[in-house]
Image 1 (tube, rainbow, N blue to C red):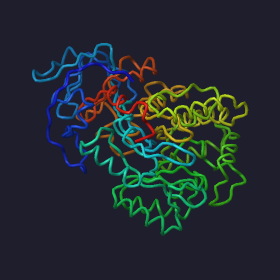
Image 2 (cartoon, rainbow, N blue to C red):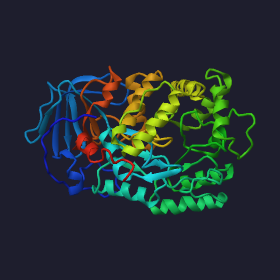
Image 3 (tube, one colour):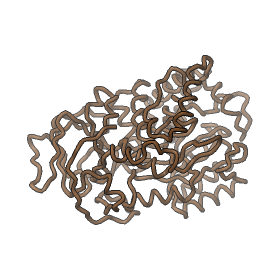
Image 4 (cartoon, rainbow, N blue to C red):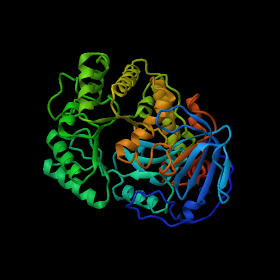
Amino acid sequence: MATCALVLALAAPLFAAPSVMAAQRPVLSRNVRQYVTVDTSVVALTHVRVIDGTGAQPRVDQTLILRDGKIAELGNSAAIKPPANALVLDLTGKSVIPGLVMMHEHLFYPTGPGVYGNVAESFTRLYLAGGVTSMRTGGNVNGYGEINIARAIRNGEKPGPWIDASAPYLQGPGLGIGQMYELKDANDARRMVDFWADAGATSFKAYMNITRAELAAAVDEVHKRGFKITGHLCSVTYREAIAAGIDDLEHGFFVSTDFDTSKKPDVCPGQAAGMASMAAVDPNGAQFKSLIADLIAHHVAITSTLTVFETFTPGQPMPPGLDVLDPILKQRFEKFYATVQGNEHSIYSTLFAKDRAMELQFARAGGLLIAGTDPTGAGGVIPGYSDQREVELLVGSGFTPLEAIKICTLNGATYLGRASEIGSIVTGKQADLVVINGDPATNVSDIRKVELVFRQGVGYDPAKLIASVKGQVGLF
């Protein structure tokens, strides 16, 4: 993630209340301003290639006028003249895409055996540096910390993306992770939803050992509160979750237990058994096509998280961004990676390719495919860097670069119910934009060449954000 030298402006307009999804530029704290390169009420981005996030072909030699946090004008540079009071940035040869809207992110990281460290401070900076301007966390082990940092970012007190902050996991007994509460029954699931919704959580996630009754109760309570619920499931099948009214299912089709003939009701057969059953499924067969039809008929989205599964798959490259890690964590992951590369009998060799084909088929059939990165597993999935890598992996799955960008921008905004505000480059929308030194529509790997990230019309310097945490990620 590169940077370019731009003029620093220090205007400070009024900020709308955190509860309002307004586009006005926030009042930024001194802590945030150290990462800002552009903060003035009128900005003109001239002679730029616009990749608008809708899947449409890029438009060349465009000018965008950003005013008070919104996209005020967009059109051919020959037709639009920057206002006299604008800060003008000549972006000849560069591209602008919508800010990434990523849907399975975390503010914790594996720092020890079965232990997840709270790394919200460093992760939020890295997400923003990578071009992520809005994100949903897919599970919370930080309790109030996650909710509070989301609020602090909205208030301009800390740098980072807008966050749809999830509550702690809705999980039953059996997994043995000490940082997770274990539900007792369906009434307990309702109680937990209400408690965390009152505390400020805006999203919920069911986890591997939840029962059907607990899931149905949680879905009902979440929907009463006006929120959405997703799931990384095992004890409950995708079809059972669809019947319960779930809104989204995580990890593509890697974790579906629908095709495990030995599965017992409300019991997780184990990750290995579930994956083995999925590895045997024909993506073009009637059984799988029937599951896709059921998902689409009930408007259930699927979240692709190819980045985390890539770290378990032999033959895949070393993930990007490891240099930001604490040296001990970096060394630990590099050792794990070497072990993976030597595994000649890994089920991931089959399942990684198969899931990519399944996700492509789901999207081609009309399903809402959204994307995230899931920085968990054995580590190595680094915020910002991995979000860019997810775009690349989607292209490797058979999507065009323009389709992959749409999945990671407008599709995410659509799921969040915020497509009228973010997710595409349209006049009147919030000025959440990523300036790229290259053309990711032609060469998707240019997505890594981020020079400037606008959130609510304020331009952040990726290099400064990265430098502030380099070598220390895993500590804070």
